[in-house]
Length: 481
Image 1 (cartoon, one colour):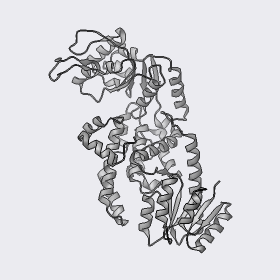
Image 2: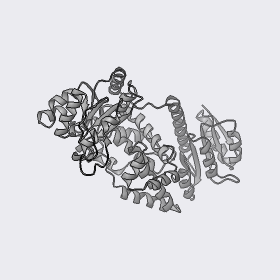
Image 3: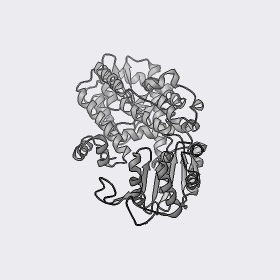
Image 4: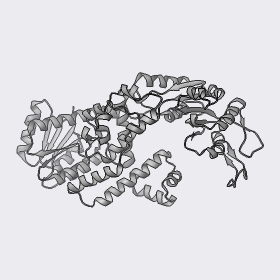
């Protein structure tokens, strides 16, 4: 393990901490100024840096910002007097791991430093193990079965039906099936049946000829043609209207289709992957879904487990989503305390992986410190009704109803008000610009994520002009996504 570096222009503080750390067999080095630390960083790096705020020359906040630019993963603990809480706020905004108020209890200081050491060792190990993060994360046995299925299907173009609760990652698996198939260098086209108005679905799927209906001013290729040679992913297939089910069945059986208003048959050369959160067998029994189409789609079936069946993956997924949100917003990644992680692992999370991702994005924006504690989690999740064992989740027949009831349906305006009040009480100045930038970055970043980086589509969804969203992306430094 590397040494713990202590920097303080007060010799007595350095002496006390050196003695306390040596008793715990924790190696340490002491420095009298921030300038000495920066000079030594050219040749060496600590496991943890502990720095005072007010020092002659380079102060602790300036040192923290400089160190974080060069070594963003290095935990830095800032020591500050009780009367200097403005410095504590600045420390957190600059990426401090934690702050230690003076005068401090020596045992408390050692405990905090040990926690930072543990976090540093764990983070460095995880970075080495995850240099190239896979497109799907999961160590649970149920997910390993999914990985094996993707591997076995890599040389096949057979139709696949993916089932699983809302938010369990069905499109992610569909993209992985495409990526590892012989069609990987061709397009992957996705269409959500529940997101398109019924009267537009047919034209959306098969395209239309010029003049086929009012507003059809030019010929348009549908999703089947756009996916030529590649993969067509039909999400929420259970919501497909009956008349369109008949047309899809004909394409899957004959291999040809017609554009709306067209007279010439067009050969369909796209692998179909369908997905649903619904019980298709039950919909067949109710007469809501064609049985022959069901059998055409259900050639190979992949069931994605809900998050409550793979709780051992929650820590891995949470770290991934916190890092992803931090990259999107251009901030330091938040970290879950062991207590917060254990708390989240016991939540039912009926919204599954999507709910966990939304929670991590919320924490990146609104959690007050770099290390997230239980009390930093949304109030809705900390209420007794929300804390249930993962095994006691809602019945599989009603995943969406349960998700609506227990997913973080957050009153974001109220939470924003709480955050503004907290910062103002902490003495923060010029808050309007900082909050506005964070709000715009969150809204535009989320839209870009949902549209897979397509700026024009994101602009349309947000009601912005193309030039406006381009300018905002540049101003907010979102281009790297």
